[in-house]
Amino acid sequence: MVAAALHCLALLTNHKTALRKCESANQPDLPMTNTCYNFQQLNEALLSCTSYYLTKETNEDDNLAYALRDGCGDQSGDLFDDLYDVQAHITEHQNVFNYLANFTGEQK
Figure 1 (cartoon, helix red, strand yellow):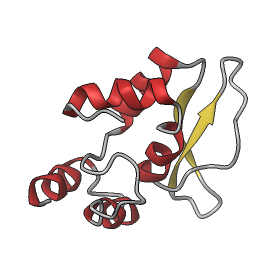
Figure 2 (tube, rainbow, N blue to C red):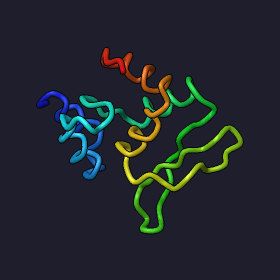
Figure 3 (spheres, rainbow, N blue to C red):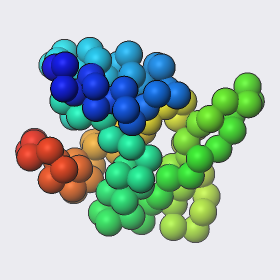
C-alpha cells in the first residue's frame, strides 16, 4: 500500500482527487487496485487496444481535465476531472485492462 501511494504521489502530484482515490485503492470495489497510471500509459493503452485516445483539456473552471476521443476526434462523453476516473472508465474494456496490467503483472 505504501509503495502504491508513493508511486501515485510521483505520477499525480497535481491531481489531489486522483491521489486520494488511489491511496484508498485497497477497497475491493475500485478497479486496478494497486496502481495509478500516468497520462502517457493510459493513452498508449487506448491507442493500442481501441480506436480511442486521450487529450488534455481545460474545463469550465480553467482546471486540467481529460477528454476521451474517438478515431474521428469527436469527444466521447463528459470530461474527466482526473486520471483515476479515466483509468476506472477505460479499464472496463478487458483488452485495456490487460494492457495496463502488463506494467504491474496484475490480471483480471
